[in-house]
Image (cartoon, rainbow, N blue to C red; front, side, top):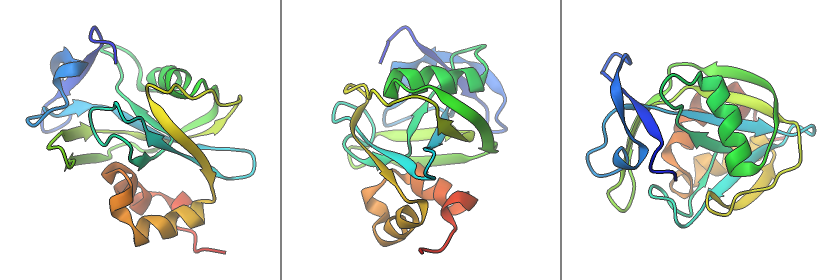
Length: 178
């Protein structure tokens, strides 16, 4: 995490109301702010899931979607998605699509850290080999979306709450197991 990074603070209607240092918006009293999530598919139709690095401030060591992040002030969200794909996974993206433009959640992890975000959700295709950044990612797995949906239903506590909530809304994960 770069302390000089700033995030966009939002009012209850999702309108920007200012900025704050990224390091200040994940604690026990987290202001509503703008973020994004991205789910990456490979050419075989498998979905990339990642286990968050143990040094992450929220949900350390927990399995999640491919990657997440925060756009900087004045940065278009789709550009932020490409920036974070490169930073977290060393990954180039193709076919980026916004699939849940108004996704919003509030969740508290076991350490009392709170996420409170309006978080547009994207799906993309991997366009280069993975080179995970160990500061961000502890493990990676390519999984069948139907198998992930089964795991999310059986053990939702093993995944980040935003992944569980997003999966409930994504057609990609609604397919029944083969």
